[in-house]
Length: 110
Image (cartoon, rainbow, N blue to C red):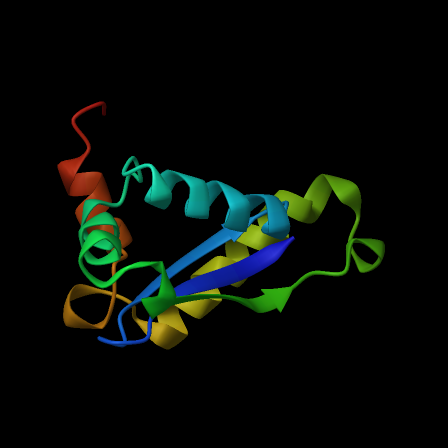
């Protein structure tokens, strides 16, 4: 479990995410991108434009589950993701993520 990035090696744009199962999340993202069904439309468009060879999948930081109480795993992963989002700022021209404030403002389910 931990935080990962999908990097467009041509444009340098990043998508930062987190998961309790990093290998599974990589497989899921690749599958969705390959079948043109990824929920991040900008990432999907660039995947379609540049092809899969233009992207790398990397673990930015993982969490050792033996060092954290199981009830705190999700919180630890969320905090780690927030740290990397703040560090890399993968928004706008730099990335495919949407700032949290904008997500809340655009969420019509509230």
